[in-house]
Length: 321
Image 1: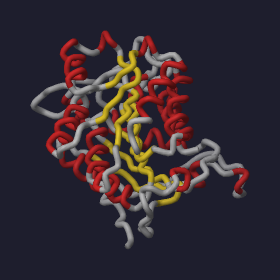
Image 2: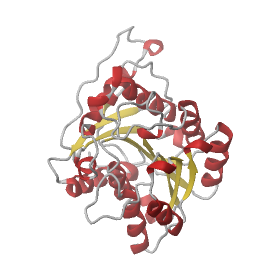
Image 3: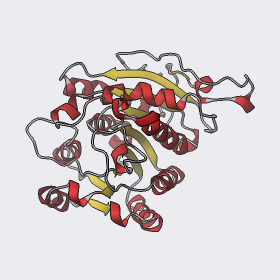
C-alpha cells in the first residue's frame, strides 16, 4: 500500500542556506530536506529514530484573531524553515517537506480538517509529522490527525504533552487558539475515551480561576512556570510518559521568557528557561514514544532579530536528533 501525498495548499518551496560543500560532512538542513513523495506504508510502531520526519506548515491567524491576540502567526512556517535551513544537519533520519495547509480568512475549521487529514495520512505511512503553526489552533488540527490515525484505532494510549504558559481550555462558542484542548477533551469523551493531557509551564497570573477549575475537572496534570526547575520538569515528564504508549508533543513558544521568545502573540513575563524546555524535548525524544509534534505561536512580525524563529528551529533540531 502507498500513502497519498497530503492535500496541501502550497507545495514545498526551495530551501536556502549557507553552502560549505556537497559532502555529508558539510550537510546543512537546506541541502538535506527533500520534498515529500508517496512511499510504502510502514508501521507507526517503527523505531522512532528510524521514522522519517515530514514537515507540514499550518499557516493560520484565524484562531489568534478570534482569541483577540496579536496576529501574524500565519507567516511562521516560512520563518521557521528559514531559520532551520542554515543549521548543520545532524538528525539520523530523513527529513521531508510536504508544503503548507493555509487558512484563508476565517475558514479555520475547514483548514484544521484539511491539515488533520494530511497528518493522519503521514502517521499511517509511518512518518513523524512535524507541524509548523500557526497559532495554537494548530493543536486541534494535530489532534484531528492523531485521533484519525491507525495508532489510535489500534488502541495506543496517546497522551498530549503541552509546553505552554496557558491551559487553552477556554469554553467559548467559537473555537480559537484558546480552546483546542477543551475541544480535544470533548471529542475524546464523545469517542468513549479520556484525554490524557499535561502542561509544563503554566503561568498562574495568565490563567483564570475558571480555567484552573476546568483543568481540575478534566484531570489535567500541570507544572507551574515558577516550579519548573530542571529536576522538577524531568520528574513531571517522566511520570506522564509512564502513563502513555505514545506522545503528541505541542510547543507553544510563549512558554519561554519574552527575552528568549519575543515573537509570540502573548510574550511571557516569567516563562520557563530554554535549557529546561530543551531538556524536556530531549527527554521526550529519547523515550521512544514521540508520535507527532507541532510548534505554534511564532509571530514573525514581532520577532526581534528572528530570535524566536531560531529558538523554534533549535528545538525541532533537538527533537529530531
